[in-house]
Image (cartoon, rainbow, N blue to C red):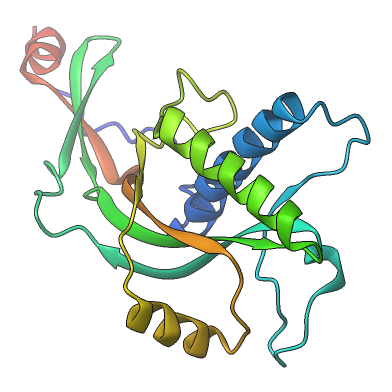
Length: 210
């Protein structure tokens, strides 16, 4: 019987990169919707994945007259189990078993703020953004080509925020009030590849032993 056969794996993406890819996919889909709804022809993105103020609290010029998507908090989903640590794949001589790091399920809090110099324009684009995420609140690799296929599903839910909570949020961000809404982006599944050798299944062992 042969010893365990190690199988080369691509370098896993760190969670920070997968978070960026998921939120960028949301932004890209929103931009495509805005372009269609408002018949935009200047090829300028109206939605950006960015804060609208810098670390010093000053406005960012590139974020002006844009819908800004900003990650304001994240937490691990604790209501569901993270899944089995072993992964089964089809090998040449039967099933193979590999040790895989458990999936990480995160809840992201994302602020959608309308940073426009014209208030009416801000409300117009904010309303369009809300409509978009109401119509497309589930993103998968099948319905969103730009979404990384290692992300199982992204769910977008509108949060109810009190006036006091909004005040705390703006204070935390160190910025002025802007028309905006808060979303919970749920079930962002991050699962790294195997961190150990791949082991042949029983059928494979029998074939090698014979």
